[in-house]
Length: 546
Image (cartoon, rainbow, N blue to C red; front, top):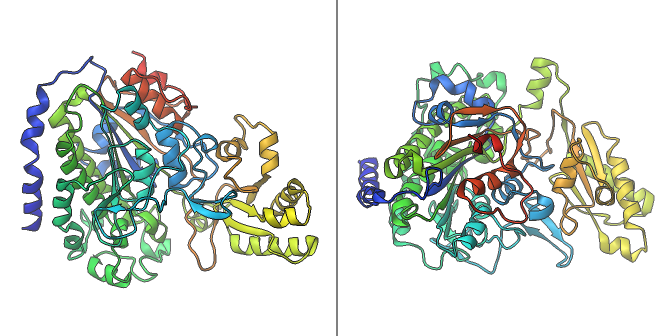
């Protein structure tokens, strides 16, 4: 009954939307709306692996009718959703957009800061602190910002995501709205940075309490589990599962919430989180009149692949397969709605990943005798600290280690009148001795050298002189960091899918290597506008040329 009510609720949005179809486009290749469908932790293997089980309206529709960039990558050293979303939305690297990690040390403020958290703004849509976010630390404009500038504010720019960093860094500075899932209340929320007054339509959606309704259900398989032959058994994978004990279907959603202390956070690890994102998006499009005039609008929708729990199950799990089979339906629903309202010729859709996912090191080593292993960062940094204490005297030499970056205590080094560059090189040389570390590069080495096209280029792409650490680390291929007590969210796979669909797109494939920085200038070319001046990517010519 509840789901029928939701269907009716969303259905009320359709008549006005359909009436707007009387508009005509400026030209055959100028879309009224650009839609980015972005998936966190999207391994290219998933498309081929689950192809036969997908329906005709989702992944199959895009891949069978669209243009495929089959060799697409994020050329950043640090493969984090924050870093990559900023790269995807700005068309440039962290060295310019400044989002070099989730967190970094602000040397001027003398403290660790987060990429998007901002106490100057408040949550809109709930009473939590989950909306105290902004794009103030993003140092270059996004595609949405550029659209706002060239159309004198007439373009409409919106993002919807499960996670705050995806929504904020996709939206940029000038978006009309950025919405994400509040793990403390189960509502969709925003920040006062974007939305002064929470829209009535969004209040109405939250009033349905969809998250609560899903917690009253069980997560069962979308299809008969016996047909999930593309997955590997739980015992073979040694999956820890939820809370180290629940690793097999069905999953009692209410029990999972209770085990997590009543938090709604666990919703993001299930397919229902993606359903909420899709339903909220379908409610937003007509209410915000996205694509209702001749000025092109931009909409980014970000889904997730089991979110932070994906490593508790892995890329071969039945849970991951079920997530993608259900996600296929969500994408099909979104495409059906868009094409039904605008027509295929009036939309430009791109589907891509925000990050990829690595195969477990133990699996690669045991099953295929590949050179892979586990690296313990906690132990390595403890040994580094001991070494520095012996070499320079007992003190707090390492201020922070986070996601492949070592921050040294500059104040201490300056107080002792030591050469910072010498200490950086000492630390890099020490870390280079560890099995599992391919390269440890001192900041002064990255600043002094140029590494175009080689294995060290990602260091330069990810390095920002005011924000990056004193030493940056790249792990050996196949090696994965794993702390004894704290889970480490890491992937060494920088390849993700990219497929284009809609206005002016003809079926085709390129095997040429493309970069995430290429998406912004390519969309700008479709829209007939200049990309932001900070863009370092190139137009994907195969897509544009006829």
